[in-house]
Image 1: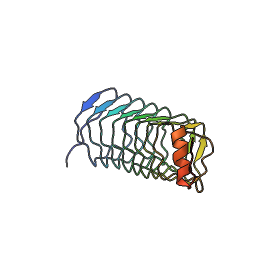
Image 2 (image 1 turned 90 degrees about the vertical axis):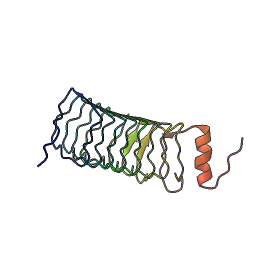
Image 3 (image 1 turned 45 degrees about the vertical axis):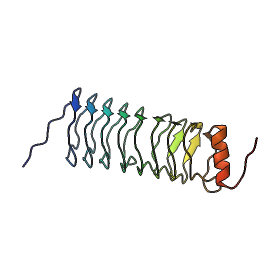
Image 4 (image 1 turned 90 degrees about the horizontal axis):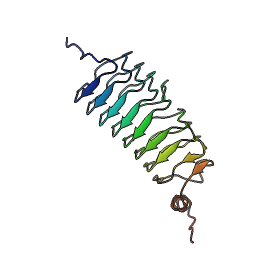
Length: 192
C-alpha cells in the first residue's frame, strides 16, 4: 500500500500531484500550495483556514465540511466542486478561478468577492449573495432559482442567459451596458 505524502500546516508546497487521494480531517491552516493538483481529492472536514492555493487544480475535489475561512484561491480550476455541503467560506477570496459547473446551492456568499472568475452553468440557486461582488466574472447560464440579491455588485460581469421574466433580480447592481443586455434578453431595445 502506498503511503500518502504528509501535509502539514504553515508549509509551502509546489508541484504536488495528489489527485484522488484521501486527506479527510487534515489540518492545513496557513499552508501554501502552488501548481499542485487535487483533482478528485477527498478533503472532507479539512481545516484550510488562511491557506493559499495558487495555480492549482481542484476539479471535483470533495470539500464537504471543510473550513475555508480566509482561504485564497488564485487562478485555480475548481470545476464541478460542490460548495453547498457544510463548508465555511467566510472571508475566502477567489481571483481568476474557473468555477464552471460548481454547486453553490443554498450557500451563503454574503460580502464575498470574486474577481475575474468564470461560473458558466454554475448552480447559484437558493444562494445568498447579499453585498457580494462579482467583478469581471463570467456568469453565463448560471441557475438563479430563488437566489437572494441585495446590493450584489455585478458590474463588468457577463450575464448572458439571465432572464428578467424568470429570475428575481431585485437587488443587483449593474452598469448601463449590462442593463441594456438584460433588457435585450426579454426583447426590450434600450436606446439613448
